[in-house]
Structures are given as structure tokens and as C-alpha cells.
Length: 249
Image (cartoon, rainbow, N blue to C red; front, side, top):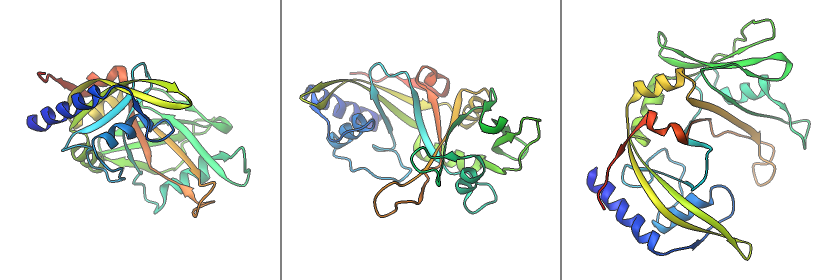
């Protein structure tokens, strides 16, 4: 693995020497997409590391938002748990009241309020070896949502995709309406372990977020779009989940 880390750092230094680089596409994913194109990596949707067993996360220099780790659809006992979450907890879309959307983030530290007095929280159930989404009404009665993520699948996702991490920082600017990036720092990390991940869920350090809506155009217009639940951690807390790896220049 050390050889792969050294190789990626060499590639990063090559890209850094290129200076300011015009974006490959618009949008909030542009900074990462542009870097991966410079690595000659094609975009894919498979849950595999970006570069030789190293997951790459690219962000703007001053970004203080959460760092996306991975998406994972709940297990539950329904064939379509995301559809049930949308039906039970969703709100009418602002543009089309006949459709529902559900955008909400939960953690294990505090209840998050929702419409109709409902509240939600994440609980680690070690006896059943799973992470559960618990929903209560305004009288404290629990809904039988039966939405959870098993330890098995979470551990598989971590082991497959996030054992090694590279965080790249980039400055940005706009020239004639186009975005440009300068990639200036890279840091490498090794995952502390599965138990650390679970403990950070319990402590409310790692969030689980839903962004469920529907396609508003294209061949799938009207269908639900579902990328699973987003597991993320604040950038400032990254050292709680990972050990930094020192790489000589």
C-alpha cells in the first residue's frame, strides 16, 4: 500500500505543477470530478476506491462542511425501504404537490424534529448488530419503521472502500464565467477500524442523511431517485476516524 500512496502523491504533484485548471463540468462535484479526469480515471458508480485501494476526497480549501464517506441503502424488512421512508416521512414537493421528498439528517446524539411533532434519532443496537433509525410521535410513541443498517454491510463497505483515504484541498476562482482549480495539498489517512466507526455513530459524530426525491426530467421522470443514506463526518473530526499517514516528499 505504501507504494500506491507514494505513486498517488507523485501524480498529485504532477497535477499541482499544472497550476490553475479549468473545470471539467459545473456543479458542487466539479472539483473532485476535474481532479479524477486529470488522473485519467473515468467516473463510475461502483463502491470501490478511486485509485489503487485509496479513496480520494477533494474539496475547496475553506470548506467546513461534512465529508461524505459512503452511501448505503437501509436493510429493513421491506423490499423498498427508501420508498416506505418517503411515504411515511416525506413532505410534498414545492414544485409538484403530488410528489413527496424527504431531506433530513440524523445522528445518535440528539433527536431531530420533523413535521407533525415527529422526532428521529439514530441508535446503535449492539445486540442485533445493526444501526437503527427510530421515529417517535409527539407523545413519545415509537413508529414501527423497521429501518436499519446491519453491521455486516457497513463493515463490508468500510473494508472495501475506505481503509485508506486521501484528502485533497483546492483553491477555486471564476474566470469569464468558468471555474478554475488549483490543487495544492494532499493528506493520507488509515481507517482506525470498524469499532471506532460504530462508536462515532453512537456519539453523534457521524451523521446519516437522506436525500430522497424524484426525477424531474429525462427518461425516468416521475420515478423516485434513491442513492441510499449518506454517512458523513465533519472535516474537523476526521482524525477521530482516521490516523494520518506521513509520506515523505
